[in-house]
Amino acid sequence: MSAPPSRQETDRTYVEVTPEPLDLQKLVQFVTDPGAGAISTFIGTTRDTFEGKKVVRLEYEAYVPMALAKLQEVCDKAAAKWDVRKVAMAHRTGLVGVTEASVIIAVSSAHRLEAIEACHFGIDDLKATVPIWKREVYEDGSAWKENKESRNLYNAKRADEGAFKHPPSDAPGAPAP
Image 1 (cartoon, rainbow, N blue to C red):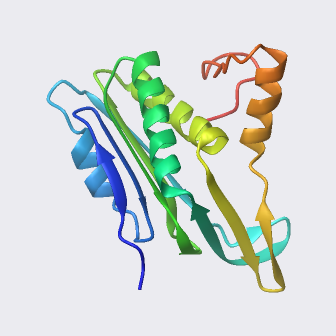
Image 2: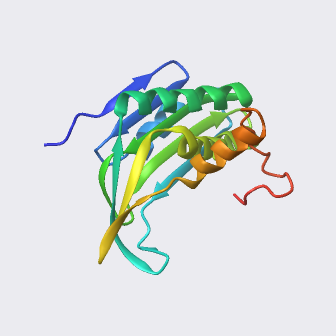
């Protein structure tokens, strides 16, 4: 029997950590707002290969109370940094098969650029700060995966006295969307 989903909601944010399949429509419905002219979404799915190995599934583990708190922090940071209406994030735990979604982010704003940039920031900051661990299961074994964003954040904080800076999407050297 799977554990019940855990979620928290404010008037502007919704976060969820669940072993159940994620529901894009639920998140889009939450962020829909009369003042929003744009909704941007990101869906992270399980791909079938990694570095030449055949991936069978992913397995996620989380300390759910802390994961929810950190997801809320990511939402709050995005809402403070961009003029957005609402932000919603959901992440799976447990077994996630190939092609299934493990994370969904939805952001609404009056204009598209804010929604897109806040969504981009959201996935980067989620991967860097939220305590959710991933194990890739291959046909011939498995491996716990290091979160490179977390390591990069640690190095950036050390180099920049704790300031996390997400470059604008049009900055030189910024990751391609």
